[in-house]
Amino acid sequence: MPTTDINRPEVLAEVNAVFDAYEQALVSNDIEVLDTLFWHSPLTLRYGAGENLYGFDAIQAFRQGRPTGNLARTVTARQVTTFGDHTAVANIEFVRAGSERIGRQSQTWVRMPEGWRVVAAHVSLML
Image 1 (cartoon, one colour):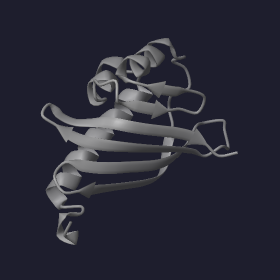
Image 2 (cartoon, one colour):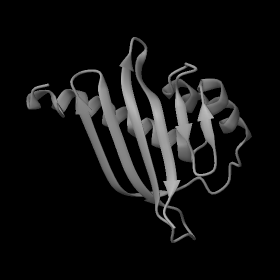
Image 3 (cartoon, rainbow, N blue to C red):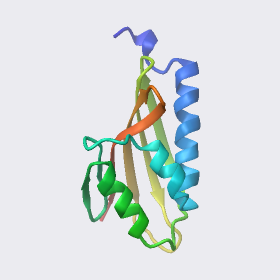
């Protein structure tokens, strides 16, 4: 892949916009938007701080059952990289009010016919 296909401004802007929509939906617990932004496939996965979820149905069930308090967080570092027109990775570090632990989130995004979707995600906390 030519380096000119990495972080092309128009593709990077699209992914940053959809990532911002994801982040807003996450902290406001907008499950409908979160569900829309994940690929509806049994191949989708999300490794969380305390759970391993395989397939969209498991991810959706987790969201519907998770506590809705203390969802706000401050993003302290962010790196989004796009590769061509159809693939991107987004990584952030974050902190929550009242906690000194640093959280990390990684997502792989793919442009599907219906738009950009998360196909894999990982959330963890540093000790």
